[in-house]
Image 1: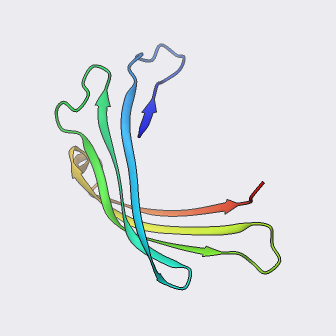
Image 2: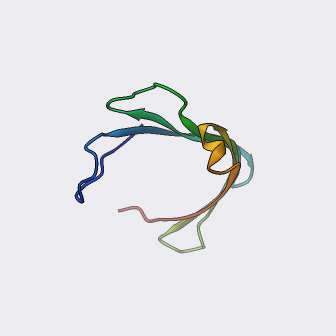
Image 3: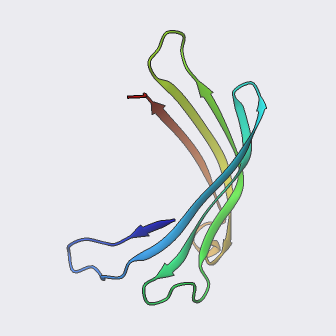
Length: 104
């Protein structure tokens, strides 16, 4: 669950809420496939009221740790289809991500 509140500049004081979810299964080696979804839940004054925007679709992840390296690389790719209110903004979105992880 995500909660956001704008700061400064005379912005509205409403907190807006959203969600992000993903589920994957190991396919081959270090490759994982699954689905992910992101969306809006509303604000303090309109929580779960009206049409809320959302994106959902397939995703793939691949992890790689170079031999002897202290870091691990995670590559993410996905295509999300707009559902409900977000269709007016964009029909779909392509997502590409890179994470670099180092245990402390």
